[in-house]
Figure (cartoon, helix red, strand yellow):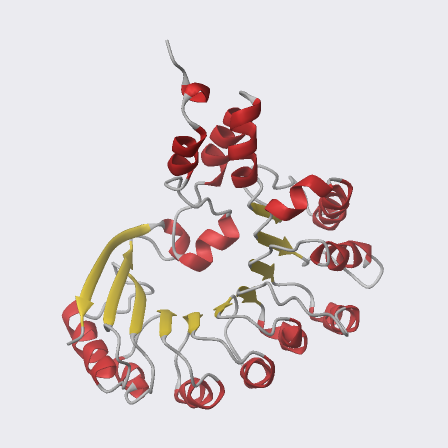
Length: 317
């Protein structure tokens, strides 16, 4: 009886195209999806160990998303320097395994345990960035502010033009010059004048910003610093008067609003119909020529990591 390895290589390559993206927890929170990395990776690992043919097809997919941050599988029982030691170990592992380097397209890193007396893991991370020719997505989770000058110095003269999607902490504005071709900017902890001004000066291709909290000040920064903005996602308690500030944005065509489906901190939840009406008006004032979409993404819990409950798509005509 024929088995999976007996299928034509062309068909196996077609099957892998339908394999879902697997997100580690930190990326799942940013994107508003559930983390399904572990069962997905377990399946890929088993397939890649079945035969040489399946290894050639599934091993690149297994290594496509690489992380060095705490998850449900490796979270320590007590607070020690484990995270920094883990980062150093995993970064050296990549350096010693050159055959996986071309496969890595997404890298999620936590630097929060690095300290002035424990900076070696950060140095190993910078070395690894120089070894990944096909890296497209980089996630840097929050870390201590005292390490910002150290990372800034380490990144002097560095450029990573292959990175198109960047998830970054607000304090890391000084290293934005390293990512000149970024198109999608995911905010992990708000946004500031420094971050947007750095993006304005060094990142001319940004057209998508996710996880932003709107305010009059932030909207003014968006208009000035990100003139090519096409897609915007909001993850916060939405105020209609603040949402209206987006009217007249030149290229905005895709507006995604993430909200809890039930009250949080005893605050009433705005009716979806009211949010959609204002969002449609915002997009109608845009001069974008493509189809304009409003997506309302509702979550059951109080965090995006609780998983998408319902999504409503409306075309703004």
